[in-house]
Image 1 (cartoon, rainbow, N blue to C red):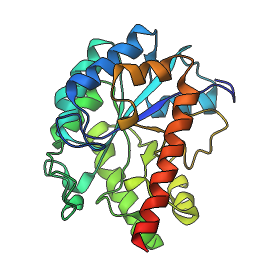
Image 2 (spheres, rainbow, N blue to C red):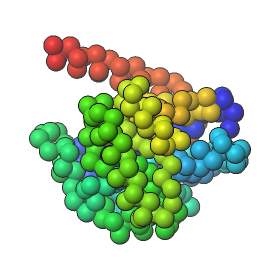
Image 3 (cartoon, rainbow, N blue to C red):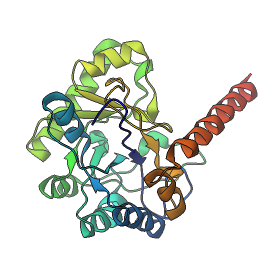
Length: 257
């Protein structure tokens, strides 16, 4: 991968019926996977990107990375078999304090449904199948609101559990809620060689490793959207998404005043 190479790292959450952007319908997700497979893409884990950058381990000519934040049980139930049928792998970022429970950190948010999370056995099942298990903190608290000691505890407790389940070192990390600042990035980067953001941009060798860009999975939930990224329209499509995302955030801030 050269500095100009662009790899889509897709950031999904739950793969089940429900409201977006948290949920992507299983049938729709299957068409996305099929589209990338038909276009000649191969998948790698986030950790494989680290290996490539550090040691020059080659990547496939057309590479896509599937990632799943929070560790929803529907990822094991629906995404896992679909990806496996096409010989694809993925990276999942479970919230370790809530394995076998629900997304309790979202309680009180009316627009967010209560969803089942993976059990320890399901996480271990994915690890044994070749999936990468990445960090996502222990409790999913917004990291910029934690002090240094709390951040260190969140990362250490998560890593201890995930290393036990996966049998390997935890090498990648996704920020809860996509929230971070310079202090949080410094602390996370001292633990993980690759820390992932979420938005509407593709990854390249020149991307900062403490906030490597991903494409929000809600922007890639149809075959047509997948074809944009797989083909020559990817840059234009993501530019439009970034513009819409920035406008929405501006309007949200104005409503909060």
